[in-house]
Length: 358
Image 1 (cartoon, rainbow, N blue to C red):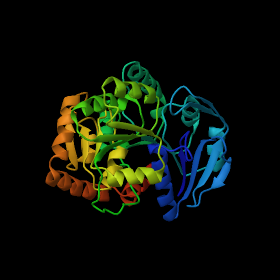
Image 2 (image 1 turned 30 degrees about the vertical axis):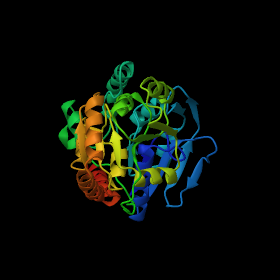
Image 3 (image 1 turned 180 degrees about the vertical axis):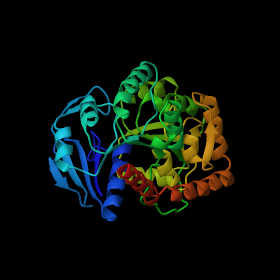
Image 4 (image 1 turned 135 degrees about the vertical axis):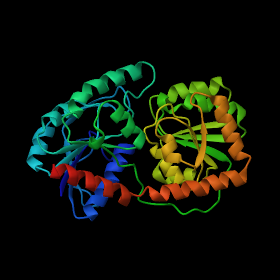
């Protein structure tokens, strides 16, 4: 099968979508498929290359406006590139780049869209802007032969918005490696992810007023400076450490040594960071929103969103009860082991074949 995966961003830009694309492309190549990733050209990258795993990368000339993270991107030549490659099927992954959406609408070949985030995701004005954007994008989405959702929650939401159930299939995020479990830990709790308002970090920082341990926050994003002010305002500078961006080696260290992971999201279609920490055998304290409970299952404790007191109580309950925390950790590892790349690509292959048979 000749497959093209399209997203405006790809390595060396690192995010959940990009990592999923890499894992799936690598697995697809190992199964004998011809895979090309078409993306925007980042500074310092070549227009064309072949990865060490055998999938090809084609980068389009692009312009960026750094108003947000990720930045607004406009690329040229997508339609011409897709027509030239002439793939059996094209998978598109992004809703917020008009130049890509325009060319994908015009592309006449077989095509699938992967829906990664919640419809209308965001807080305040961002939510309304996102909802308007999604309503406009529906015109593009209606031209696709099938939709892949990253969670059953997203699938149900799309069906509730009028998409036929036989046109939407869930293929969850996945892992291709499982770290060794040492059982060793240090006295801190952890958050890893983008620093944006939808992650609910305001409430986590406030909750730390009533938690007697250290919180390490790893990640970057437009909310960094505001979070620094919140940390000072709530008087928790001695308990909360903003690490910013960290290397994969540093992230591995923090995930393997933390006592638990905290994810106070306001919206979460799936929770890729939660899945990753589950693989380390660490319990997750998270909000009971959207697709998070389907991801964490019995590998953690749940709290109400926007409730720092409930969040602090759950963190303290887990920290003060080692047998409970270790049981949740064992559950977490078992859940993660089922979310492997082989199972995910099995589903994606089946979707592609179904579309090609139509």
